[in-house]
Image (cartoon, rainbow, N blue to C red):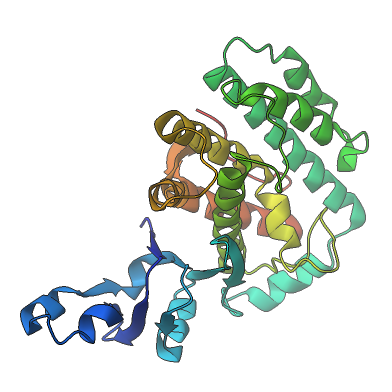
Length: 312
């Protein structure tokens, strides 16, 4: 079942009743001029089991401990945003799989050669998807070099072909944006990409926990201050799907300095984006679970290749 993504950008009371998330709007409930019938219309409920990602983006949101407990028990990722309305925090369950202890041990015991091979596969999948996305969206750009780099990626990407491919990819991907440079702190559409990648990171981290893996212990990323190194590793081949969505948003809304509600609404489609994995079409959130499940099997020794999505 495809899980829902909910975004809250206004003051709200969020609580739990009968296995349902209950949404109440404080301005409506506290108003003496609003009739009781209208107040009831501003109370909405959502089945907990249907939720996959919840985004909290307002300082006056109140959420109960009972609701948080229920969300985490159902492996829902809760994302909080900062004053600039950018995702800044991620809450995930500690216990996400029945074989979690065994899978933790396999992950910790992963040999250095295996980690290098897994990163090689990840970089190959990312470059292949970037090349395919250029062919799909910017067909005038030659991609023979990127196709060749896929087969040239060595163990642990020792020659750093990921960076070379990224430089070429970003140089070509947004011809409609003058002098675009990909950097998280630069001008639009970098803010679109930052927001989209933050949502993607939450989706991947949720899938990792659901597969009994630690999002902190990466196969390549290893920043001591990063609690989601493995999520940052595994999301790499998924990034081009976010890039495609951002390109369609630019075509629809143009290049804007601020993330409007409409643009955020578009970016919150990321978990339901249509991707191809194992020869079948699948929502991105479901594909993420396929990927993380295959990764757990690689750590356990029953599989040699991580299953990543491909661009249709």
